[in-house]
Amino acid sequence: MKYQEYYRQADFEEVWSILKNVYNEKEDSKPLYRDVFDAIRIMSVDQSRSHEEIRLIVNGYNEVRIKGAPDPQEWLVGREVEVDIFEEYINNTLSIDTITGHLLYWSTLYGIKTQEMQCADFQKWMDHMMSGPYYTVPDNNFERIEESYIVKYLFLDFDGVLNTEQYQARLAIEGKPITDEYGALFDPKVVDRLAEIIEKTKAEIVITSSWQNILSAEVLDEMWKKRGLPGEIRVYRKQESEQVSHAQVVKSFMDNMSNTPFVILDDEDQYPEECRNNLIAINPVTGIKEKDVAKAIELLNIYDDMPSHAFIDHEYEAERDRIEKINGESCDRKKLLYWRDTILCDEAYSWSSNLVILQKKIKYNIGYYRFTQRFEGWEKVVAQMELCCRLISITLGRTKVGDKPYVNTRNHTRFCSESAYLEHDDSDFNEYRKEELRKAKAYKLIWQLLSKYMKDWWD
Image (cartoon, rainbow, N blue to C red; front, side):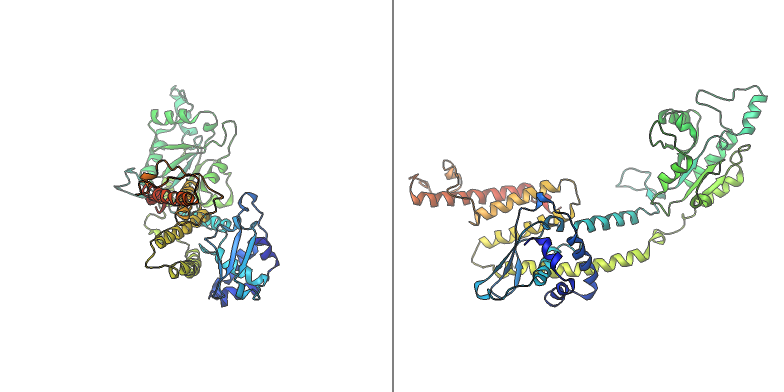
């Protein structure tokens, strides 16, 4: 029967009794196991991951063990489960609930989660970390951080804020140009007030003006420098051909940034309710005034004297710590069980036990990397580890390679000390020697592979 079918036919309360009574899982972990149990029952089967069998063994101590380290739950659902019971215990048939309990415990070796749950939790944690405040480092040399400050956004309109009706009228009366190659000229007094805000807050300027729909980002940046305007600007344009409202610009920046200080300087009142407290409505006749400067500085610097821990969601942190503690203690118990039989079977007189333990460790990490998939190139690392495990199996004589695998005997002196190692190509004795030569070659390759890659595997 397939892995998923056991879960669909099992009763969770009976499954939980196995987890609790056989494996000593604590009551506070029950909801976590319940979530995984329910998730597995409705998972879709990935046919490309369903070819390997899962072997469940009842050993000579009447204990249930499952071979190897588990893959992610998403990889297991379509696989067949083979139940192998020692002959003397053949009458001790296992119920579906019992088998499911053992499968669930084994398959959560790396955490009481499915891979999808882990990804969702990681994204939730990332969103939590991104909720602010944010710190930028002016010095890009990360070995020497001179100053840090909270990221703040100043959303800036042009017409009616920097380009004022009063200033345009005065230029017209005096017979001076009211535009340059970029557009209407900005009021110098208003620009000075904007500069004061930037100097005292270190806010980043994000343009909300319709000018960004006329001038390219490069031209706006050029204008900013030629006119000697303060700070640096960001130009937001969703698509080159699309008109974007001021409110859309603000929303695109402020989504998932609940604690980030921001101010909107605009002469139009077109913002949703959640932005009202951060909107400074500018009089288009006069542009930014002194009182607007004071209010903008107050809003942007609101968190400056607060420690970073003031922004922590303590309820979220407490719950996350609680779940991690449950997971951590459960994983520790599972690791002891995972290693127990390997250590008990170790023999002081056998050199091969060293390779058995190494192979066990590599298989443990293969499962972990498949479960987390947390870095680029994990598939390549896993492929290298799998190759090493196959070489160890060949060295230990534990492979099923079919009849008479090809072995290059011409270079046997590089691997074996006997000068006349292979003399009779067709003899039974020679086939035995070929197999020994194959093991010797695999043994040499193991250490070459480890020498080249092992440090990267554990990084």
